[in-house]
Image 1 (cartoon, rainbow, N blue to C red):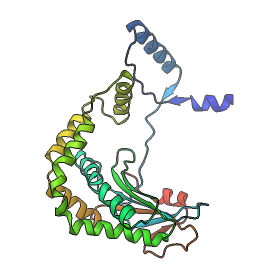
Image 2: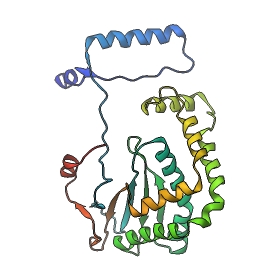
Image 3: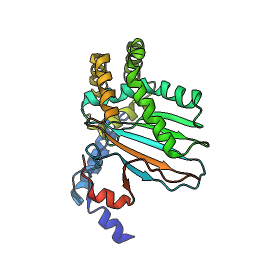
Length: 265
């Protein structure tokens, strides 16, 4: 244990935040203690949290081992880049698709108990995920249902135009929501530091970016997603009591091998 501790602490990278009801002398004392500790050990750069680049691959798939008998599928689309504009487009696209995806595949088609979507960023790189768990249909059927839904959205995209301004206002309201207590504000500031937003202006920049996006841009974004122009696509699935999928993908059988051979963003 002593050797492990010494090795662990031989180098370190430190980020911190002191905020709230602190006396100035206490804050300076903590700062002095940290500086004294820092002089005793070597420092290193922040560990890079790489994100596997799947944008230029074929659709990749991985079968997840699960004891539950129900088939389940998650399809993840990796956005072309992590620019502020693409983050905003990804958030808006997920918000636009969330309700119709649930209504069509859960309420109308009754494919399963768990049906939904989500905005999924990995180390600040944006993406969208769609998931279904079904007691009735095999995984391949669920995959085709998700793809068909997305294709139909593109074909009927204009029917959502009247929702556009309301949707944008809802997202902007969430971004600019006031902190209701000191704990919430501290958490927001700490998350901003973790996201390299040292000026704490990300929410304002994102709000302005969303305000400037028009409906034609979200339409083009969704067309690119469906046709995979610059997007990556990964399918995670559990077949349950059914056979593995025969859907045409690049099959991952070994996660470690995939990680070692991948390019990283």
